[in-house]
Image (tube, rainbow, N blue to C red):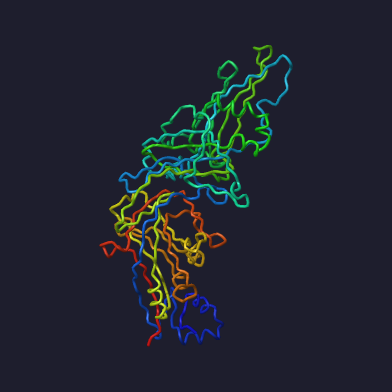
Length: 517
């Protein structure tokens, strides 16, 4: 039997029966934080160099068909120092309709006519916000970049049908990626062409003029959004006016036709909305599409007024209507990114969305065999990467993440064991750490179970690890499969093991105990 102890032994020690505890105590005088301190074991540590390299990404899966994707980026961001790839993020989404849509449902006499006037139609995108210190207003959050700089915004009708199943293999669920191209049909839907857009925290109120048949204003409606029925603090929201004539032609005039008979029929007729951002600078805004409050979810809002006339001039009735079309169903985030070529130097670049990841090799087979021969008890294994503080650190990820690249085995990516075995204690961690001056310094990944399994020969499989900007969807749910999604656009530059600054090079620190001679 191999003379090797693993961390899982500690749990057994703690739950020994009272009689067994006495015998355990004869050999182990103290167990704390997985480190043995007694006369029969010596404790020490080693630092191992790891190799790493840049892995630029061409795409990431960016749909909500088989994923938990709930945040979508819109806008443009370019690093002021050009350290990272520029991102142009756009959103493609289906629309949801309600059953039985009618412009006018009442019945009037033969000598009456109904004149419908579009009051306004616009795309509504509520911002994600944080209540300010005074509690009387909100601050915009989930935005990176220069909010004072404009980017160009346009809205199109999509002619690409989004299918649940893969057209080339209908037995499989479909996937859409960040570099997919969606065909545009017709002219732009936005009323003003090439909108120069920038976020505005003061966009909290919209006054809607209700117009009669002769364009005179009959009354006004005021639209505000609140987080709850009890709240009195107005949430800011984006409002992009759409062309009223085109919308009436595409929607209102079709309400009682076959195109609106069902959601499936509508999805085939109006296949989606493309919200496209372009430009050389600006900001990236993250919008949430999975809010429990209907009002906080993105939608198209259409306001129109029906004036009922008798004998052509006498107003006998006025009906004010509002139809909402949620950006619902299938959605895709597309990222147009620079094809940046990173130099082969002492750095690796980590950038979210479809930017760049790092690939890490902990040790080769010779090193594994050498460590196995020493019969070590692994107390802790931590992989540490230091940040190049001279690079752009304006938007550094608060957390990085590790996963296994199983491409050599022709299977999907998978979770590092500690991500689920130690989930109650933070998993693999990878949180951003700062130095004494408050500057960003490093990331530490705890991979004790993973390393222990390799050195104990419980597994002989040691694939390369990938390091990426953390996304909430990275965490394991019910299995060990890893899905590489990302709406986190932040970026950081890390030192590799080849850096000339030896105190900042990437390292695997292993703390171990070994039986005394």
